[in-house]
Image (tube, rainbow, N blue to C red; front, side):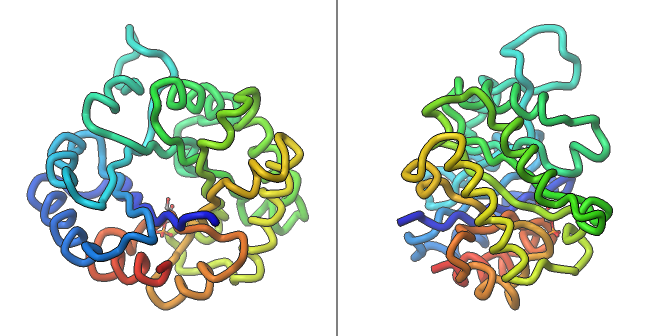
Length: 250
Ligand code: 13P
């Protein structure tokens, strides 16, 4: 039985009291929730304060990116050890905004993934096709390639990875994938994972859906057999809507 995992990807939003107040409010709202893993992923600059705010609660801390080297002359980058020292448990890797705007590739995703795993962080690896790719009938090719290449050569560690299926056309657009569309791709990802390992491992891996998930569509999406949670953007910036999505997963 896979535990559902709802993670808030704050992207480049919130500082100072706005960040810690949001965590405090989420803590109050989800204090009784134990069936769903709750994660917040603030920007790097807020991680230490966020770790203090999350301490001792059922709200876990995640980061939005990680570099593959452990230290050195990589101006502007953050290592897995740094995230660990800041109290981080999860890290998002290969978000489509990083692929789109910052030159992220399946190969760099794979390097980041290995560094995260080596440091004991739980990676949330994002995959998903653009509208152009879907319209050209290439959704399957793209998602299978991103899954196989991004998650290559990690052996038994595959069981520790969380995957987020985020169709690029559904991110921040208000246009959600239908539950049936999302389920189809989640099942495809799970079949791909089974080819890469075996059925038992694939059945244990949590696959989140991301892309305009909101309180009013969360329940139906989360009730699909292969949808094990959500990676939430806009709706994660308000405690009320984020908590409502968490509760839809209970
Ligand atoms: P929205 O929920 O704002 O569509 O963003 C989804 C996302 O990109 C989460 O990583």
